[in-house]
Image 1 (cartoon, rainbow, N blue to C red):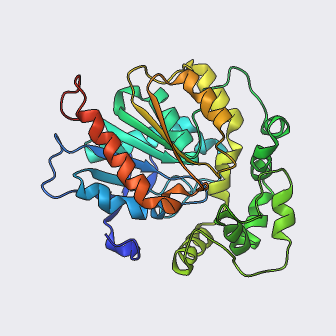
Image 2 (cartoon, helix red, strand yellow):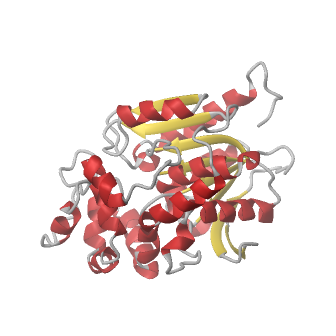
Image 3 (cartoon, rainbow, N blue to C red):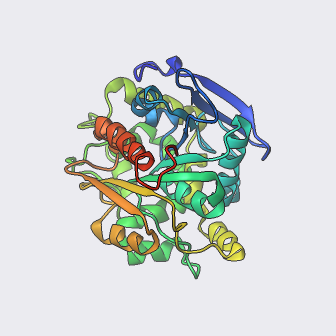
Length: 335
């Protein structure tokens, strides 16, 4: 399991009971025992793929965990439906449950970054009987809305989320496909860089700028090329479809009557960078209202891409937190 060599991981591709085909990395520890070795199911965000977890997989496996990392719907070697309704979190969570079924895993620790954080938070609502503990990174928990709010209105109320309205526009697909390297170079800039596209319309202005050197990035050249190749191969329509699901998500959640609070006894860890424009103390504070057992860890001076920017700290802190869950007085000795 060499982070510099994607082929060194154990890759699998299987059709799930939901009818969708998923590519995923499935890494087992030495002396794996399916009854005793906890499974960590890691869910990436936008624009990412399994590769985003390359620095965490090996160390967590060496700590005795089974680590499963899928390419989420629309990415990598996984199916890429054209219809945005296929990307609702209800359907994504059904896929993740089907993946656990395929692996013979009853309950797992769910770990998510960015859109993955949102998805694993919803997994805890849709399938509370399948989750042992929850780790969310960079995107704080938000409860199901009691009324539908169009993404354009969200962008008006919270200008730092204006990019979501841009991504929801179907014309953005061709824009990003055309200017893919430029888009990815902006996306993976370090938090000290001046370029960002959080306000509405700013992305398109940045994409029209003449090509310039990549500048300060959280990725080295080899890693950056991995992302360019992967996103170019699959195209940006699938990844962008996540931002086109607001109405579908609202209708499914309202129909199911999903609760606002996460399960009372569910341990939850939130990890974030203090330079991340999408994770602010205000929204983290709001999340506390809905999570009884929330712990949070802030990484000073880090931005959105904490899996890379704080790779060693993420690896160690998650491992220590999970170990702590098994050593508490009321613990049964295992997750």
